Every structure is written in structure tokens, then in C-alpha cells.
Amino acid sequence: MAFPIQRPRRLRQNESIRRLVRETRLSVDDFIYPLFVVPGTGIRKEISALPGNYHLSIDCLVEEAREAKDLGIGAFLLFGVPEAKDKDEHGSAGFAPKGIVQQAVRALKSMVRDIIVITDVCPCEYTTHGHCGIIKNGYLDNDASLDVLAKITLSHAEAGSDLVAPAAMLDGQIQTMRQALDTNGFYNLPIMAYAAKFASKLYDPFFKEGTRSTLSFGDKRTHQMDFGNSDEAMREIAMDIEQGADIVMVKPALFYLDVVYRAKQEFHMPLGAYNVSGEYAMIQAAAQLGRLDRDAVMLEALTCLKRAGTDLIITYFAKQAAKLLSHRTGAAAQPLHEPALEFQL
Ligand code: PBG
Ligand code: ZN
Image (tube, rainbow, N blue to C red; front, side, top):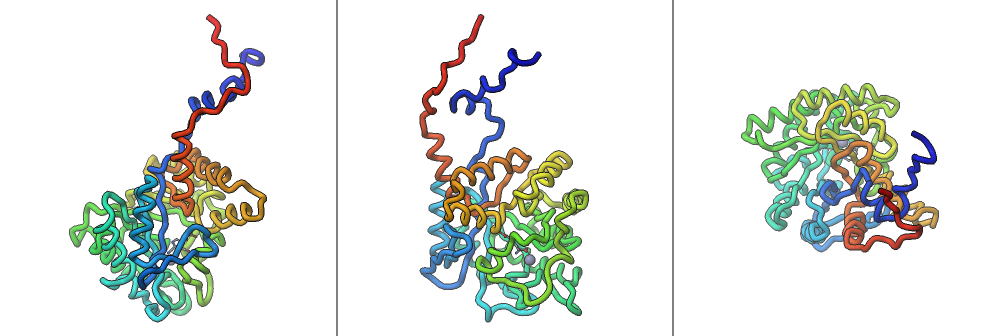
């Protein structure tokens, strides 16, 4: 069978038919909205590198979560932005019972019903040097850092986190966290592992302005993955699953769709992708210059992530995309521009 019997354009004639045969659908159900929480009250300050995203004190955080929930967003990923004076070499503010994230979790869980509060487990927002754990002789010490991860994990669990998300890319981190949780009665608390997390320059807007956790020396290439590697990403994911990860994640997302695709094909696990700060900033900046249609490119990017195989999408676009999706479902189909299909008997 070939042309003219085959005419793929038959199913592209108008939005009604395209909609019917569309293979991938973006849903607000899949969105995870990252939020940055700061000490204080009444603070809602736009993060200039992430326009449309804010540094929020807990009162404003609750308000923001309610607003997002009204748009259908049901999951949030929390990042704490402590004051510089609260940082130390070991990141101990990261596991303080009254730390910024711990307080924020308590507030969200008690004031907003039926949401999932996910907490990022990594010391780098709380260390003076900005690294993801304990530094010994200028090198990130793996096993000493695991102890810190266990403490952060437990403090998040005790505060009421619904899902802990280890971001450090330390060897054995999932096993350490699973053990810490299980021996303290939190056997039902799931882990979403940043399983294949690459050493990427696309995190810069997050560091520089999101969490203000810039490195005082070196980089993260001794623990985060080399971006040329995809077999290694599969090994990392396999290890995390073996150690007890419930959801696995690829990060960044848009340059890494092959990794997302492979991960879904090989593991059949709930899979997340982190549409990171640099990916967001690129689209926003190009739109600001008038070079790209922001809404269209945003929906294209997020839909393509789903097509590649991701189930969950962590994205700074969550609210903007949710707004567009809710308009779209209410909208009538576009008028026909070409004659309707004629079915011949
Ligand atoms: C670790 C963490 C980072 C990001 C999310 N969690 C930075 C890093 O590990 O290097 C980056 C997210 C983004 O760029 O949007 N706390
Ligand atoms: Zn880190």
C-alpha cells in the first residue's frame, strides 16, 4: 500500500481530527511545581532568572500552593533558601527540626489539603562551600556525606514530607535513605531518586538566583554524571531501583530525551524528568526577545518529554502550562479549513 491510497494528511486536516488521534497528552496531573522557600513573612520576590517564580516566605508559600492547586496542580517540590549565617561546613541547617524546609512542610501539610509535598534531599543549599556533602581534602567524601543525607531525610519525614527526593548523586544514597526511613517507622514513605543526574551548566540560574548555593571551589563532576554517557545512566538507574527507589528521574530533561526514552524502555518504572532552570530560562529569554512564542514552545517542550516516556514532569512552567491546558479543554474545536472527510462505503 502506498500513495495515493496512503495519505497521512487525512488525519491532520483540522484540530478535531488531530485531537482524536493525538498519541501524547499533557496533563496537569503529571506536573510537579518547584517552590523556593525563604525565612521571614510577607515575602514574595520574583527570581529574576526564573521569571514567574518567586522566593516565598511560608505564609506566601501556602498562598502560592493554594493558587496552584486551584489550577489543578497537586504536587510541589520544596527547596529551602536559608540565610547565609545559617550555613556551615556540614549543612546542618538542612536537618534542623525547625529548619526552613521542615517548617514549610508542616505549614503546607496542615494548611493545604490533598497535595503531595516533595522535599529535595541534598546538603548543598546549607553548606558554606555549596557542595553536596562533607568535603575532605578538597574532595566530596561519599560515605561521610551519606550520614548527612540520612539526617536530612529523617528530618523531612518527621516534618511530614510525602516523598523524599535525593539529589546528591552519592553512591549508596538510596540504600542509606531507605534504611534510615525503615528503621524509624517510615517504611511507607516513597523515594523519588534523581537517578540519572548529569553535571550540567543548565543548573546555573537555580544556583545563582534560585537557592543562592554557588560553589566556593571546584565543580560537581566527581559525583554528577558526565553528559556524554547514557549506558552509565542506565546503570545508575538500575542501582537506584535495586536500592529501593520508587520513582526514578532523569535530569536535565530536554537535551536528554534519549536517556528518558531508554529509561522508560528498560525499566518500566514511574519515571520523572526535571525540566531544569536553564531550560526554563532559555525559553523565557528567547520569548522576551520576541524570537519564540513562549506558550507554544513551552507546551511543545513538555509534550515532547511525555512522548519520550516521562510520567512526571518537574517544571517551573507548571502554573503557566496548567492555565493554558485548562483554557484549551474548554475551547471549541477550530473550524474546518478544508472539506470534511468523506467516508465511502
Ligand atoms: C540539588 C539540586 C539542584 C537542582 C535541583 N536540586 C542543583 C544541583 O544538584 O546541582 C537544579 C535544578 C534546576 O536547575 O532547576 N539541591
Ligand atoms: Zn546538591
